[in-house]
Length: 111
Image (cartoon, rainbow, N blue to C red; front, side):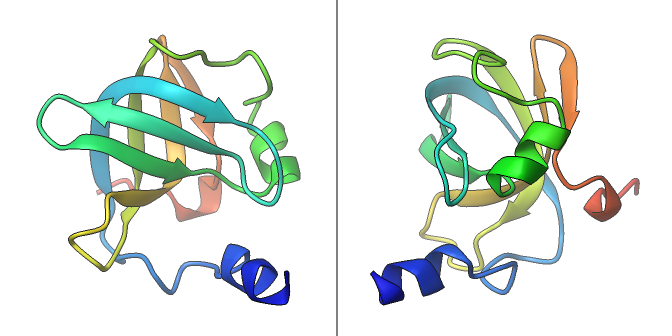
């Protein structure tokens, strides 16, 4: 359990500094601690794990149970894994059905 807890609270060290966009279809929505996450299927890269903030941070953004469902289209702005073979991203903003959820507003790069 300790190793899992340490891994779950890893911060941003595993992610690239540069932010990129990922567009796809939500396959699963997991709101449970330690970090809510989505599985997003893209047309060209398959399924990605998209980590959101901790439950309180995610809720503050307005993203709560029922905000998104499997089959919804999504655009994710975030920082992908440093390991290019890993399809994993930490989201700073997600847009579902035109509704924007700023998970980490202070980290959003505007250019």
